[in-house]
Length: 232
Image 1 (cartoon, rainbow, N blue to C red):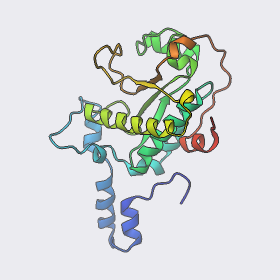
Image 2: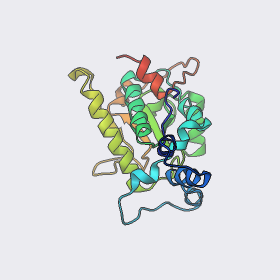
Image 3: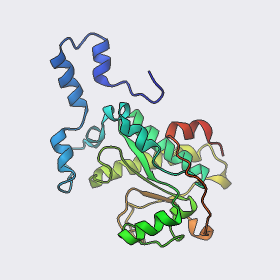
Image 4: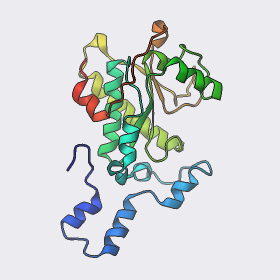
């Protein structure tokens, strides 16, 4: 197997001789991946949660990890200037998803002035450069590899659980002075000033470090690369 490749259930069954016809292989593989009609509906109407808890099954898409989108999405974010703790945390979240057959990727990390200005002009962001945590490398946006932002409230909450688990595991390895504290954009509880932005995670006290940064060349990196190379 190649690094990062996921051994899907249908391939394991085929290797064990349990799938003996092309029809059996097709039906089993199709069962593991999102239904094409349901996938299309996500982009035509608001997705909804059903009466039963099946979020992990809904979000699974094992074939994603053997397709071109895995590499394209994995290197979409620019990691220059990004807090190393945040890099490791985001990579852990994506890897926790991958091990469950759930594709996640960091859509945005560090943003240049041109990138932030363009987002403000389009109405995607309300924070002018350099007032966004992204502009100093202290925020990331994590989305689904197939459905992107088109997730239900329960699905976003599931991603938030992965995020909190990854944060607990990272902080367990850090001394007290270096522990990472994050705000989640989907937490609209009492006193929260976020608009509903559940893909967004930012370091809690980033505002005291807001400044203008002169960017260098983009630094894309896959999650597994971050975990292998980045040290605190």
